[in-house]
Length: 222
Image 1 (cartoon, rainbow, N blue to C red):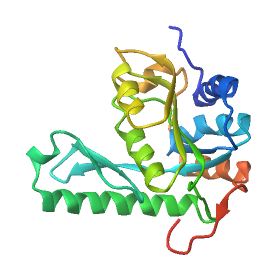
Image 2 (image 1 turned 180 degrees about the horizontal axis):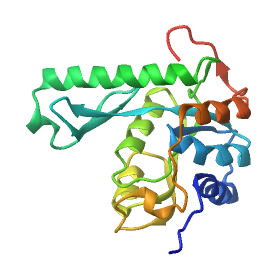
Image 3 (image 1 turned 90 degrees about the horizontal axis):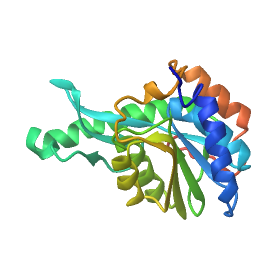
Image 4 (image 1 turned 135 degrees about the horizontal axis):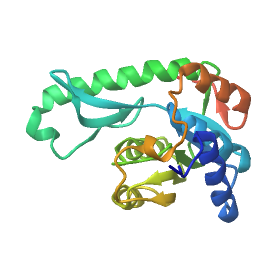
């Protein structure tokens, strides 16, 4: 079997070349969706001479049925609900579940951002993940970037369904997808090596990037 991508770094390198060929904007802030998306984002940030940072997206699941995703939320953005969420739980319960998911995202971001955060306000933000079947996680990250004051938001993905790409095109200023496949079921199928990415790997990539540009100290959170 031939895989389109050797691993996440290979996907990021190819994505970086595609973006660099047309990039005319200022020094970007590259948000990798934790955790696998950070590995893809690192070559993108390096090629565009941008700043690498991380965004954590958590699934909002009903406690009695955790396998069902009712939505997604970032550490600081508004919850993004699926179409069926209203049918499965009343608003009060949905709010409670969203708060729990958001707190979990905030705690994880604290692990990554002990040295400070890159401020998205007024900047071009490139949101990168290792792929998108539905696009829900990336969509939540895009909305978080908008809420944080990003001037422009670009989505960059190695692989996605056309439906996900179209949906994200309605949220972002630009969407770049290397491979659009309507038969995509699992992102892992497009990588020869799709090993689990741990927190230590994310931290190492962030430290190696320096995260020096646009950094701010924020005592209220990560």
